[in-house]
Image (cartoon, rainbow, N blue to C red; front, side):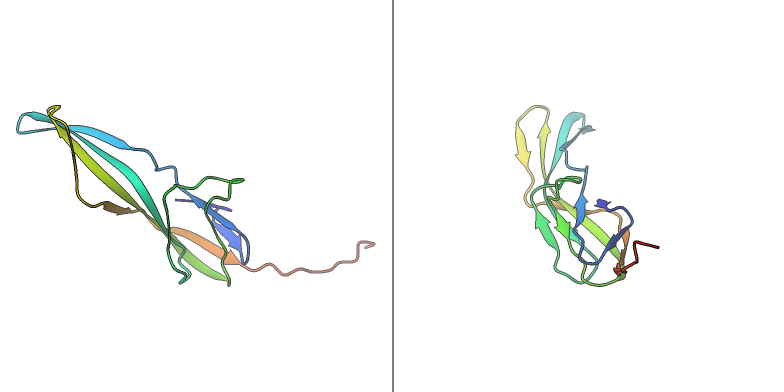
Length: 129
């Protein structure tokens, strides 16, 4: 998971989240002498923002600034940990006999991403000084 701004943000500021881990993964293994191709494709992303708000599930991985595709506004100062759970659909093919789909999805939760949420206080200054 990537967060913008990185590492710290402000109360009431759109904080952008996204991930680069959005591609289909394919691997081939040998099982009982037969080649088995296994594919896993991300189909949904569940973002937990660490502030007690409901998790957000999306069908896209988000994008970096200036996109603002997936954002969250924090309402108070805190040190939070964000997590992303990617749900994968899987299928396999044994010795080119055709694809077989695995029922359900496989959820993978990545490591927590720490974020400091701070509050900015406006201050008027004398421009003549």
